[in-house]
Length: 112
Length: 111
Image (tube, rainbow over all chains, first blue to last red):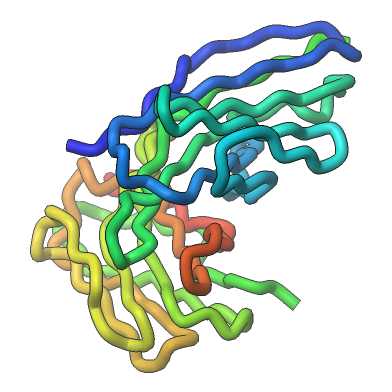
């Protein structure tokens, strides 16, 4: 059973701090890694993707991938109250169908 | 112009009824999906179609039947609804190995 694991939280950080969200996955064949943000009552929204080992930065967001450790993380710099949401890690299953396996999500709460 | 649109947004129905959810995407993507999100926010894939061909069929009761009349549409029909079917159902689309674009979801409540 291929799995993606996340700490469910809540992760509480003060406004302006760095929020660090972590995810581990079980399938060494996975090639594509995604972070989605989901506000309460809304649909998941893609915010970052990463395919290669190392860091990828986009504005206040940095995705980090370590395939050897089967670990992917998302850093949010200068956290804002509007960043408060559930962050879902998703990993493709390594097959030909682009099936994404989602973690259960980490609830982030940014305190003003 | 909504990229992936689902209807209806809310569906309240009695046990034993049959209902359908419709999904349309205008992104030109080749692949569409149905995911179920339970009360603990866990997203689990149900079905996927690539250019009208079923490519993923997870362990889902056969009361659930997807249908894709063309690559822009993917509908979900559910027969004999049960209490445990209550959840939010998301349609999504993608191109190649890219990330998904999700629809706004259909909150199904079976009473």
